[in-house]
Length: 189
Image (cartoon, rainbow, N blue to C red; front, side, top):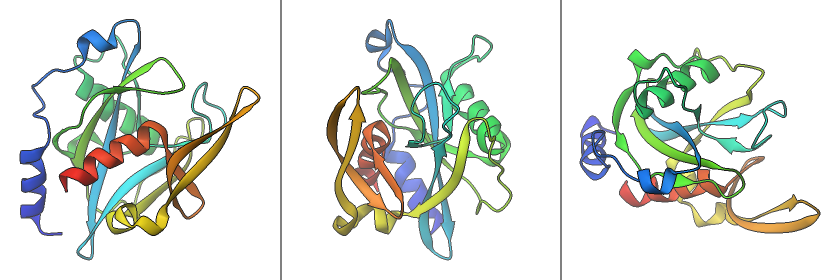
């Protein structure tokens, strides 16, 4: 993907300085994620993580690098970059943050998440923090858009099986807030 396409995406994203959702975030845990994009041989990819089984929430789920805000974080973007560095070794100075997507609450926990979109180089030297991340993987945007990979993901929640829309790519179902973030990103690309 040519660099000018990233410039077009930057114009469509919410500017970094514009706040949103503060009234919706009341009573929720503030968190941020980084949606890392990279170009490999002219094809755009999105980087994901699979959360480990050792974390307190969202065990084994596909997500983006990120997590809860710390009191020392001066802003929510710092949270996203700090967490991406801690979870997968993505150094903040190597990320070109283009803007952000709409903040939203998770369906299954008390988190209010702000997603930031950033461009990274081809990820060849990332390392997973084993306590938090079971796997780092990427998916081509073309596959995320492809209706053949759309389906439903069934999840046992407290003794009752719930079914959710999902992208079923490889062995990693992408659903919930991660899917909602991808849907918004795809609409802007």
